Image 1 (tube, rainbow, N blue to C red):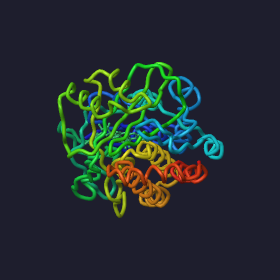
Image 2: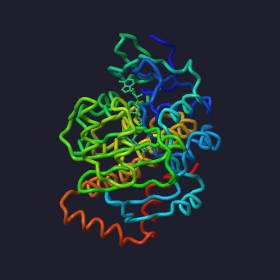
Image 3: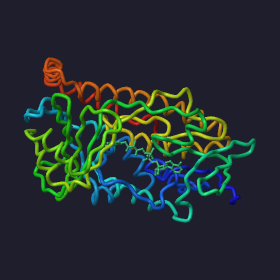
Image 4: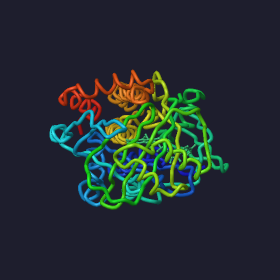
Length: 385
Ligand SMILES: Cc1cc2nc3c(=O)[nH]c(=O)nc-3n(C[C@H](O)[C@H](O)[C@H](O)COP(=O)(O)OP(=O)(O)OC[C@H]3O[C@@H](n4cnc5c(N)ncnc54)[C@H](O)[C@@H]3O)c2cc1C
């Protein structure tokens, strides 16, 4: 058995690595166990709102990183597929109030930057957790390669299909939203930067978001049976047909993306758990509260969870006390976001022409201050730093 680490972090995604960076900065011993043979993220973009960027700046991913890799979000819009802007919200007053900006970034750039704050010797790759046993004074981890490790406490940051969660609370399948999502990055210059615009049609939705002056990140969603899959060329042809007459450059960015670089993911969340922790083990990020991406808050919440938990572990040596404080700060907030995100995706996916008309009227008549208030509710921090 390996030498006992104080905190074992299962999963080196954005959440797990943020916790590792936070613990390292507080001199709390830890080890990260990641199933993949290397550290990497997928080729897509990520919206990071103020609630996450303020935590990232505390671990050293701040202004200079954003200046090089981020595209600041200054306004948020909802538009129709034909090109009509239904709702416009200037994000800057919220950002000013909250004190930190929001950005769109390439996932790989962010993942690399956070990983750069963690000493490589603390990360073990190719370690797929298969089960976890709790003892009176620690936790024993069993990996797929037959090796075992021990730790004082363990944190499951192992995503949507978390083994840690299943070990604590039993196996249950995630809830399929009924919508599948395609994503890609296209090499394309775009005039309009700093606008986060969701385009809603009769069922399908899309967005085209500049990452910098050379690249745009785009995504689309549509209703589809769970687990659907075509060849890359057929997926691309399907998207080009579905979005052929959409405004705001949607068909152009799809056409400019190589078929084999287009990602497809079914969108899931899960109902809330009564608790995220049991004994010496807790969960964070998607392992605790996976959400549909409709509010762009999944990674943001993982980052906040990690930062909050890292702080509490420094203060409370007794894991039970730290975990219960962590849940009292984070759980209700995250559950509210998961619920709001599910609702937003459901409304955005309406396909009945009358319902779509109603949605468009509602969007167009909601005053900007009300949209801003709801945005602020979603991106406001749930704890002070
Ligand atoms: C289409 C789409 C768009 C999105 N857009 C946004 C957005 O704009 N903004 C935003 O904030 N969020 C967004 N999200 C959500 C975001 O991607 C996730 O919430 C975030 O990645 C969760 O981070 P995590 O660290 O909790 O989990 P993950 O990123 O899933 O990381 C989990 C890690 O654990 C590892 N792992 C898994 N099982 C094991 C095991 N048994 N043993 C060891 N390691 C294991 C995995 O390999 C992985 O490295 C989006 C999601 C989707 C699907």
